[in-house]
Length: 366
Image (cartoon, rainbow, N blue to C red; front, side, top):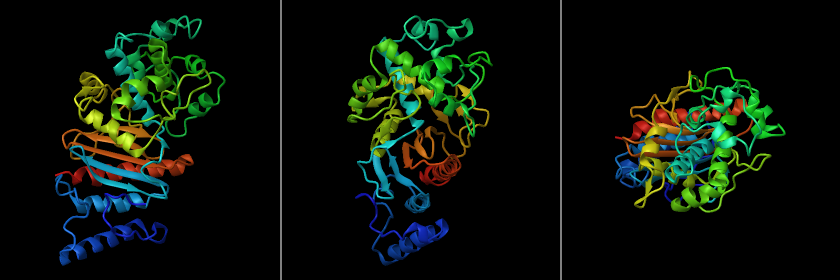
């Protein structure tokens, strides 16, 4: 269904048309209306926010052609310009945001440091996991820092990424904490990026041990409350810790609120929710990703640093097409949600959605 903010054209069912045909029909309708004087812009706020409305309409058509697409939102200067829903989903739909969860976990670590629960990113696994969580740690693992984990550079052997088996092995394990800690060290901590839900999960464990609250409860008080986000589901592992890297559920507008928070350097309505210096540290290059993912050659603190658009950007990145893309210079936030199925199909959807954002939506900002 289209939102009340969307233009009032009727969509042709996308299963009857190719993506190119959908875009061509939308463009034809737009130009014929403009020639008659009935419509001056495809989205009412596009021109007011100095965005190319035709480019946004073409991007919407392309998004609508992605199987399983749920939602697409574009905001500039804090003003909602595009809010579209597909496949029976509406504004109240709460969806699994997959690895976008990691960027939320990063923000909670920053808040915990600001609140004095954690001293800094140089604190180690030994500082927070011994003796209450595990009985012992190998010396090399004991010295792994919070900063190492935030950069996905803990040094653990971990094959995730495309077709890597370790996520599934970890997910089905009897102890989601011990499984990670039992992985051998294959790199000096801090030296190499190796994408791992296990390392993100250790950050949730550290947060819980440091604050005495689950990540979900801490987020409700210190992050979601100030953003006006109500109670949300965040699944937990088999030792009771919320998953640090996955399985938080949010609406499209919840994700937008979080993106706006980072666009505004951690502040909302005059309140500093996430420290401004943490936003900066989290969203600038900390480590190279080694080409793991298109459009994301570098990594901050559980945020991807983007490339390929006319403006610098960074993004929270979730399996199957869950994105929060923040473009500071253009004052732009783009959010998407998509159904996630098998890996090959979800990877294709992921690429189609992110390439649309990088190649069409961001360049629409004048």
